[in-house]
Image 1: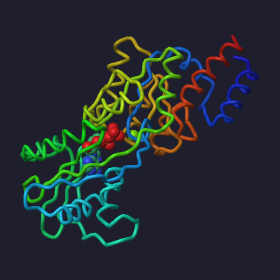
Image 2 (image 1 turned 180 degrees about the horizontal axis):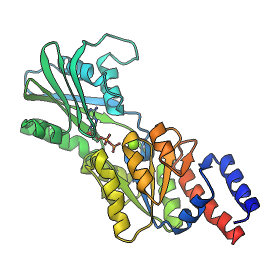
Image 3 (image 1 turned 135 degrees about the vertical axis):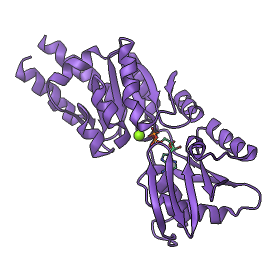
Image 4 (image 1 turned 45 degrees about the vertical axis):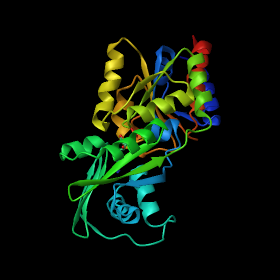
Length: 296
Ligand code: ADP
Ligand code: MG
C-alpha cells in the first residue's frame, strides 16, 4: 500500500463521517460478503417510547406503570428509560418515582427490584419463565399483537403474579432501507441480529428489506452468532451500537460502530460511522475497495 493512496482514502472517509482505525482495515472490507446489523439503535433510532399499557382484570394501569417505572429508572437500557420517563408523566422531571431496593439488572432479559414492599419484575417472557411465572392468555395475546406490529412487549410481574404488558416502540431510521439496498448492491448479504422477539425483528426486517433474521439472542451469545456465520465460510462485517454488541463487533472480520452509540462499541470496532447514518456503512465499504483499487 502506498501511503498517499491511503491518505486520500481516509481523508475522504473523514469528510463522509467515516473513521478508520488503520490501513489494515481496508483489506477486510474487500473480502466481506455478509453484513450483520444490530436492530435497536442501528437499524432503528433506539429512542423508545411507551405506547401502550395492558393490565389483567382489576389492576390499575397507572399503579403498574409506577412500580415498573421505579425499577426501570435504575437501568440505562432504552426500554427502561422509556418506561421510567412515562411513569414520571412524560418529561425528564415530572412526578418522583418511589425508591427501589435490591435492584438487579439482567442483561437481555429485564430488571427486578423491591418497590414499596412489592417484588417487581419487568422484562421478557423468558425472564418470567426463569421465575416460574406465566402470563394469562389475555396478556400473552396482547404481547403477540404488539410484536406482530413491530413493537416490543415487556411483562410486569408483582409479588409473583404477572399483572400487565407494557408496549414500547422505536422507529426504523428513514435511511435504513436505502442503506440495506446499497449494502446489497456491494454484494453483501444483510442479516438482522437482535435480542428482541422474533416477530418484532421480522417486522423491522421486512420494512428495510432484510430476509435473514437472528432474534432472541442474549447479549453474551451475539459473539457466538458471528462465529457461526464465519463457520459457514462467510467473511462477516457487523454494525452495532450497544455495550451488548461489543464482543460481536470485535469478533467480526470488520467491526463497524455507530458514532452515536456506546464507547464500548466504538472501541471494539475497526470503523466508526460518526453521524450514526447506516448508509455510511456502504460508503465505507465502497470507499475502502476503491482505495485498494488505486493502490493495487
Ligand atoms: P437488542 O439486541 O435489540 O439491542 P437487548 O439485548 O438489549 O436488545 O434486549 C433484548 C430484550 O430484552 C429486549 O427486547 C427486551 O424485551 C428485554 N429487555 C432488556 N433489558 C430490559 C429492561 N431494562 N427492561 C425490560 N426489558 C428489557
Ligand atoms: Mg443496539
